[in-house]
Image (cartoon, rainbow over all chains, first blue to last red; front, side, top):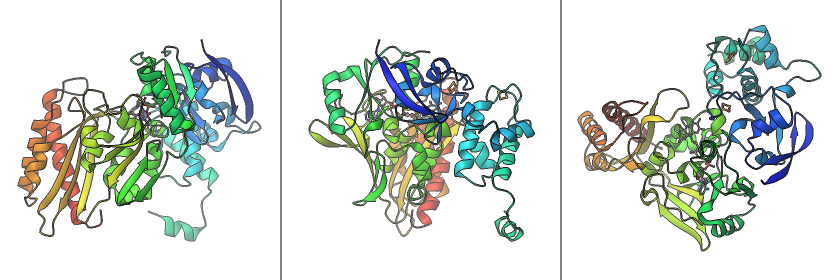
Length: 169
Length: 292
Ligand SMILES: Cc1cc2nc3c(=O)[nH]c(=O)nc-3n(C[C@H](O)[C@H](O)[C@H](O)COP(=O)(O)OP(=O)(O)OC[C@H]3O[C@@H](n4cnc5c(N)ncnc54)[C@H](O)[C@@H]3O)c2cc1C
Ligand code: FES
Ligand code: FES
C-alpha cells in the first residue's frame, strides 16, 4: 500500500495527514480529520453533497484524491462561520428556511459562498446555474435561492437610489 | 466505491511526464481534471497501476490567438473557457460547448485536453472540434506531433495518442469572414451527457452560398464523427430553408444512435434532425452577422 504524507491548509489550519494514494479527498476530510460536515451523497460525482472550496473554487471532493490536496487551501462547511458568527450565506439559509433535511446544505453553502465572492449581484438565473451541480431532493430550490439572495443583500446592501435607477433591469 | 490501489506520481514538466509514460507504458494514466478518470476508477472500469498527475506541469493553461489560430493549452479548465471573453465573442460555438458540459463544480476541474483525450463519443468537445477543424498537438519523446482532428478518434474510446504522448495543445483556425458556428445540445437534465448534440461550422460567400461546412455529432455514433453527407449537401448551395431541412435529414440519416435510458434510437435520430436544423440556422445567422 502506498501511503504518502499530504500537507494542506483546511479552514485556516495547517494539517499533515497520511493518505493512501487511492483515498478520496472526502474520506480524508471526514474520516482522517473528523470533519463530517462534508457529506457523501452519491459517490458517483453527481450530487455535490461533497462540495468543498479548493483554492477559491467549489469542487466535488469525492472526485479528487486526497494526495491531490498537497499544498492547497481547503474550506469546508465547518470553516464558513468566523468566531462563532454565521457567514451571510449561512444566515440566509437560517432566515429563509433554505433547508429541510439538510443533507445538501453544506455543499450548497460552499458553492453559494464562492459565487458571492466572485459575482456581486448574481441574477436569479445565475444563482440557479451556479448551484446546478448541487442537488437538493427536499426543497425544490425556491428557499435556497432566497437564502442566497438574502446573503447577497447582506453582503452588498442596497446601493444609493441613483444607482438603483441605472442598474434596474 | 474505492478505486483499486495505484502508485501516484506528480510530474513537474512535459519531459518528466513523457519519461514516466515511456517507462510505465499502458500501465500508466495521466490525471488531468480527473472528472472522467476518477469516476471510471471508482467503478473499476479503469485500474491503472500508475497515475501521473500533470496538474503540477506549468504552462499548459492558456487561451490565446497566435499565428491565425486560437491556441488552447490542454490543462485549460472548462470554467476558464466559459469565462474567456475571447472565446465568448470570437468562438461562440466553443463558448456554447463549454457551458453545457457537466455542471459548474465539474467544470472547475475538467480540462479540454482530458475531454478530447478521453475520446468518449458522449463528450461535447469532440463534435465541436470536428466542426472547427482543430489540430491536436501531442508531445512525445521526439517532441511535438500535429494530429488533424479528423484522425484523432480512430476507434471506440480510443484516441490517436501514442502511449508515451501527452496532449498539450488544441489549435483552432481563426474564423474568416462570413464564418459562423453553433453547438446545440439536448440533455435530460442539467449536467447530463447529451441525448444528442450537433456542432456546425460554416462559411458563406458574399452571395450567401455556402463555401465550407463541417458538422460534428455528439453521442449518436460509436466514435465522434462528422455528418459528411449533410456537409456535402450544403457546400456550393445557397442556404435556404429547404437546404437546411435536407441537410438535417442527411445528418440524422448518418447518425447511428443506440436505444438506452436517454431514449430510443428512433427518437434520438429525429432529435439529430431537429438539432442539426437549429444549429445550421444559428451558424448561418452568425455567419451573416459578420465578425464571427
Ligand atoms: C457528473 C459528470 C458529468 C459530466 N458531463 C459531461 C458532459 O455533459 N459533457 C462532457 O463533454 N463531459 C462531461 N463529463 C466529463 C468531463 O468533462 C471530463 O472532465 C472530461 O471528459 C475529461 O477531462 P478531465 O480533465 O477531467 O480528464 P481526466 O479524467 O483526468 O482524464 C480522462 C482521460 O484522458 C486522459 N488524459 C487526460 N488528460 C490528458 C492529456 N493532457 N494527454 C493525454 N491524455 C490525457 C487520462 O489519462 C484519462 O484516460 C462529466 C463528468 C462528470 C463527473
Ligand atoms: S458524493 Fe460527491 S458528488 Fe455526490
Ligand atoms: S434539504 Fe434535503 S437534500 Fe436539500
